[in-house]
Length: 523
Image (tube, rainbow, N blue to C red; front, side, top):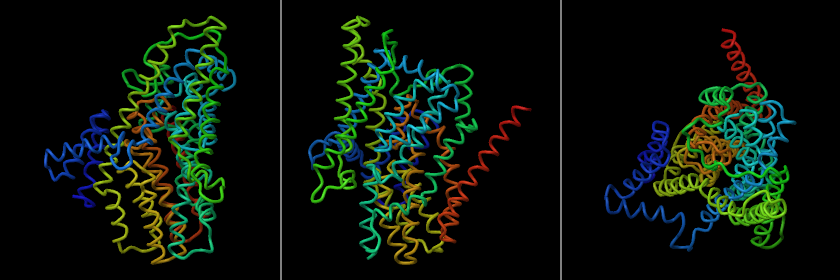
């Protein structure tokens, strides 16, 4: 069953179930069961054993002890829930919303501000997704922008920016792999960093996806399921449809201080950002051997541990501000503290459950060799080399979509892209690797089992499946336009012509959608 067409069955089944039932835990559970059955050759006893081992690996691994990465991510989520609760209790969210509505007066302005924040906070996609959501929600809620649209904005400016930024956890990881690929093929005249920089304009999906975020905001163009969510938000003021469970959303109405200021939201967020970046620099510098450089620091940093340290510092700041409100101003009762802690923890439990299930199915899919099977199809194909960039883009998209991990796709496909280019036309090695990076981000955007998709929904306070269903049409449109660029790149070798065509087609597509919207209104 491993590394065969059957390995595609569990992720496809889970994704279909998600779309049909909109019940993510049930769907992931069925995908987990299907994966374990295949690995156990339908032996029920062995299936239960494999399932338990995969699930327990999220918390404890027999080889290395505790799975600190996953534990730290879960703790950070819970801490962030508590921070959110106390920001609300201290009146920070209310005050920031009142401040923002005086300055951000349009729906387009609120969306653009959120997108710019998403591009500025580029150090890590996990942190980006959660931090931008905390800052943007009061602004977008006031402008009646659906949480689904906010989740899309966050998701489409987190991974896309991280994958083209050398000073990020993503960039450092990619540069490390690229360097190994170049050395293995004797390309010593170009450094890994230089190769990464040259690949940045070749990442057509990134630029089209980011362009679509801004154009859809400026021209107020929405389509597919997103249009229904936006229309509902505008007409009713409900940013989340009633009855939808939204991870990260506080379930109960908490007491709110009337003395809260914008600083009650801004300072905890600034503390969170500064302490997290500082922790990343510290953990990275501790792990570097030899000469310490900024690139080596980000390559070696422990993102999960840094998030935990940053979260604890941010929590300390927000609790200090809460006690200031309680004792200095007498604005809040002392028993509110425990209510805030409990409600904050409870708000993040849905996201934690989804992450645990997603990590489990990803582990089982890796055992099945789904990604390696997809990669083998490329290696075995006998195609015209000019089609290599577009084929690798689509295969990387399929792999990340099926496995829920863009990083895993990088690790598997970047060396394969280098091997194919070296064996056929070495001049295509950078375009081939750039197309892998782009395709992996595309697949990640569409996958309901992707951790970044889950965390983007959590940061926005959006129902997980609503985010997946509404984002897919935007991701597919961006992918189609990027595919045209990769076709041109394969045949002409011109990066800038290919990028210009992709961006030009994006402008045409948005104007067509805008004219269609105006025609419907006129009718």
